[in-house]
Amino acid sequence: MRRAYQFAKPDGTVTCVLATGRSVTVPVFPGLLKHLTTEALREMLAKPPVVRKYTVEALRHAAWPLLREFPADWLKECLDAADLRPSRRKAVLFLLG
Image 1 (tube, one colour):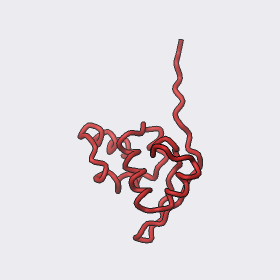
Image 2 (cartoon, rainbow, N blue to C red; image 1 turned 90 degrees about the vertical axis):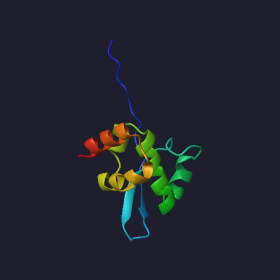
Image 3 (cartoon, rainbow, N blue to C red; image 1 turned 90 degrees about the horizontal axis):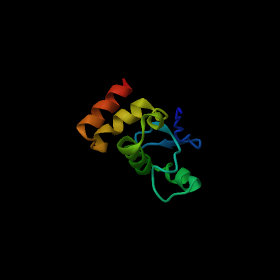
Image 4 (cartoon, rainbow, N blue to C red; image 1 turned 30 degrees about the horizontal axis):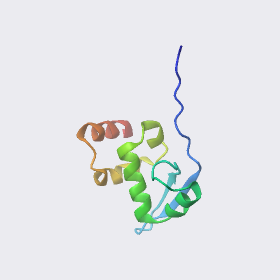
């Protein structure tokens, strides 16, 4: 029997304006930041420090199908803050192209 895995689908997107004036649109995955409802997560992701922490947590723990939903340049920008294991960092860089 063949097993098919279904990864989480984003529950919409949120756009956050960073201190530099750049706007970043990230997908909403309620499980990445613990204990927040979808609506609370949407409100929190409008804040620049939270959207950075959310992206760092995604880099640390999320599978590639979830990471693909994030803007590649934003993932690269947050990569150093994620402090990944060398093997995970190498894999993420490879997948980002």
